[in-house]
Amino acid sequence: MTNMKSPRIAYGEALVELGEKNELVVALDADLAHATQTALFGERFKDRFFNLGIAEQNMMGVAAGLSLCGFIPFASTFAIFGAGRAFEQIRNSICYPKLNVKIAVTHGGVTVGEDGASHQAIEDISLMRSLPNMTVIVPCDAIETKKAVFAAADIEGPVYIRIARPVAPIITKEEDNFEIGKAKVLKEGKDVSIFATGLMVAKALEAAVTLGDRGIDATVINIHTIKPLDEDLILKEVAKTSKVITVEEHTILGGLGSAVAEVLVEKGMKAQMKRIGINDTFGQSGDPEQLLEHYGLSAQNIVKVAEEMVENLK
Amino acid sequence: MMQVNELQKISAEVRSDVIKMIGKAGSGHPGGSLSIVDILVTLYNKVMKVDPKNPNWEDRDRLVLSKGHGCPALYSILARKGFFDVEQLWSLRKLGSMLQGHPDMRKTPGIDVSVGSLGQGLSVAVGLALGAKLKNKKYRVFAIIGDGEMQEGQIWEALMSSIHYKLDNLTIILDYNKLQIDGPNEEVMSLGNIRERMQAFGFDVHEIDGHNHEEIYNALSAPVIAQKPRFIIAHTVKGKGVSFMENQVGWHGKAPNAQEIEKALADIGGTTI
Image (cartoon, rainbow over all chains, first blue to last red):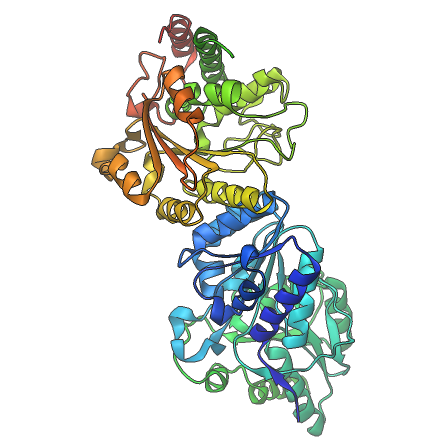
């Protein structure tokens, strides 16, 4: 039985632990502290927690100001209100002057679920990776979320961490090494390379098992850092299979799939490629798992796409 | 303490720099640069604790020019205070210059915060004031905002938070010249009774002539009212000091030509306030 835990719960706990170790860590939220779990930090470190109310643009600026005083601010809200609503504040007040602000947002992707399309950020990775000086991390499970929080605090400069809302399988181990910008091969294979990020890594692993049963040997790679992208590893893996599938809980425009395609095309790598993601449409209300299935973000669909790809080449 | 006539002399010098800088650059914002000269000159020469030899001194007072397009005035003052070589002023807006069209803290010594996109600077100022409280630092934070800038929603978010967190180490100065790019504030989007609005928010409100150095000084250095941020409404004249620019919307974002530069410098030379 796989252990399950919500990455956002792991975020709240990690932030408290980080706060114990480093008194320069401060947290900000915009009236979603109980959803993003920064409330845990607020209870533990009352003086170092700032609720800015429902005002994300101001929150980003205040975080910028606090970083200029030497603090390491973690600003949290939902992905849609951080990367979306406060995009230009992140661009001009944080990234342009390369300030040491960590934007740790929860509720990324369609697994927000029942709240529907208005609250489901499916373009945030694209927006954030287009910003100079920005590092973009999408942890795949609760354990990796904690590591991402600590790693983000260790580097100087803006970091965007996109954290998922639902309870999700734990697929990495405490002892696994986590390094920003270094992708991880979770399963070796020779027929097709599946690059996944966030919650889709677990789906890719699940798909690889089914594919194995059907005689297709898939490599599964966890791209936890979208920027800087681990180009060397991508090129190395694709050289082995010449077949690429990217899977992301995000629009296929500008996210992981686009980033991988950019590398492959520019390096002249000949490969067949399919991007699995949200196909230029908005989300909707529903149960998170049902939504993932609806939009093709399921192990079953990854299997289907991989089989078609291999069949075509036979 | 510096005398008022001394501040007038410096202000005239800064105004001349502003005209020459924007003239040489061929673009820029003379109107809103000239309207904040006296405020900035008073801040940097009589109020703020700064060290040009150590621009990142941890205990320095901070200035956030939220209306970043007025930066030629600030650049001139920083250069004349010794933060960088005066010769740099003539490179304003040129490729590779340390003096960008809007302030860049990573390029220009003495610039505390990168600003320019209206509405954003005040939030950073709130963060700086909050950080000072958290670190038990005694420095003050000054933010200059424009009147048109007050139409940005983020300004009101920042105002609310400065009151909520009782930031009495923060002083907000409104450069109230009543004009913005498309016309008078009242025609574009009226600001209502700012004094009443700010009083209702809970600010320590002061209303002054933004070109009278003594009034500016008194408002900036009045005793702090505990737990109350200060809001100074500085009535100013857009294009102040240059007869043909004063109160002219057209001079918001236009560079003077050679003839106009000459006339402007003659005006400034004869300025008596």
